[in-house]
Length: 391
Image 1 (cartoon, rainbow, N blue to C red):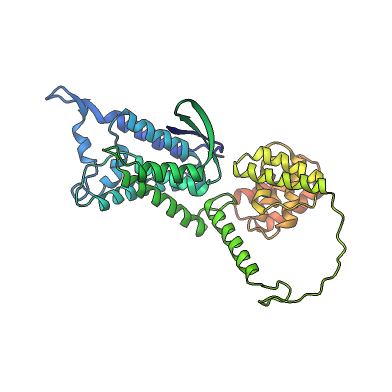
Image 2: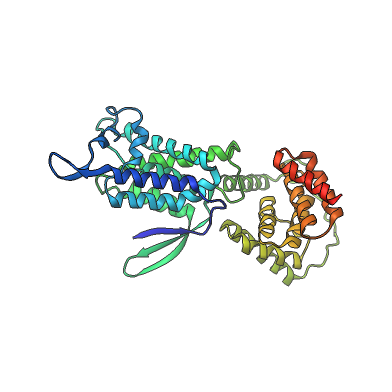
């Protein structure tokens, strides 16, 4: 048996929408049951049947309402547990209203998948499993490299950390819902429809940039794989990067003086860079920030990917390390000055120099640059007030 119970990343903001959905499910579950006045038996209240999904029979709105009903305590406990586990970070990424809309459409998509596949033999369906599967599919796309701690018990009990991509894809989708379909009464096809909806829709949100991509999501992994594929194809075709022509070209070899590199220092640099990538993939930004500072001590000319460097600079600022944060932001602007939100970085630098580092000239320079491009009224006012105070 395998049971995931913890992820190694934490949401940056309180996932109120996810908590609200869990609370709503629990309240409805408590209202579902009561004593039948005619038979004296404990069971569903009469109104419940009006909101259960029966494909081809029940009204259209039951494609959503069925997802807020549950058969028993075990049913709701595991659905809400997995919604809590994976939903917090998806809520953080999509925002509160975006997450709620995504969840409701996920419920409808999973119900529709169940209805289409079982059109010949429709059966009553209830439970949030399909909607939770949609959220879990979104987590797979957004955080495939995060680590999930799993409890296992066979002959003995222990824990192991597994990348989300492998756990969700292989264990939760392939094994639990495709290979192991022995247990009756479970809407496996609703689960699969929910996973498909969550994965496809979230990928589309990343591709269209409705949701901002990062260096660690599935779309970034696909783009990286494609760049490597193109490189391999180009090299295997004998492309000459000097002339731009295909085929193998004869190039006269010349000896070019190269700066001496300390092999030990170079090895240390590579080790630190690999560790930075691992920590960022795990969303362990405090450790990544510490490693970045070590890298700068070894070689200040080292360049990190844009999002890595920005995340590290933000982390240093949130850790109340203004001098180190300013260094990282300065490096970011020198390398990625064309970044679409560079004015935000300029504003942060100006505030760091003004409020924490006592460098008014540098602060004025960055605040003036920020003020030329800022569009948010509150940020414009903050920038204006800080400049007035400095002058």
